[in-house]
Structures are given as C-alpha cells and as structure tokens.
Length: 138
Image (cartoon, rainbow, N blue to C red):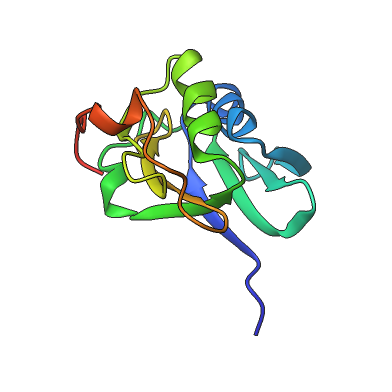
C-alpha cells in the first residue's frame, strides 16, 4: 500500500496555492475538466513529490463551510520557527504557535488545519513563540 494524496476542496485556487507555496510546496501537475467544470491542482514538497495534496476547485461552487470536519494535513519542516515566521510575515495566523519548538498549527484560506512538526529534535524555546498564546482552535 502507498499513500498517494489528500484532497481538499478550495474556493480560491490562487489564494490556496499561494498559502501552500509559502509552506514550501510546488505545483507538480494540473488537470482542468471543461465537461466536469473543475480543476485539480497537485502540490508537493520538493524531493517528496509522491506525497501530494490535491486541490479541487469546482468552478460553480458558492463557498465551503466547516473546514474543521476534515481534520488536518501534517508536514515535517526543517526549522519550525523560520516557517512560522515566514507564514506570519505573509499575514497567516498561527493558531497554535510552536512554543515547544516542536509543533504548530495554521489554517489554509478555506479553514483547513495544517500541523507543522519540527524535523529531528525539538528546538529550544525561543521568543516570540514561547510566550505567544493560541489564537484559535486547531
């Protein structure tokens, strides 16, 4: 058995792709269906192209509610503080900051939770993360 991808439905593919690009993912393929009126965009971390996120955009949808019913995607990152800083600098809310140098949660524009986990050992607690409160559910 082999993991292929996780699919999430997105309202604004450009905004969602920008979010995943901030995390470090790149588009690996795309499929547009005129007959089905949808676009599939596959994104993956460089060097890990077999683990993909499929962004499904249904052209006629009017918006999605309840992204929390999905759960979350999880990514291992080389420097959780640097990734969270890059996201925060771009206007992304850090819902659960990496106070422990190990784990953080953020959300996509469609309210899907993304878990970030530090590769290797935990990083030493550092500011501003160590004293930053949670900003919402994760």
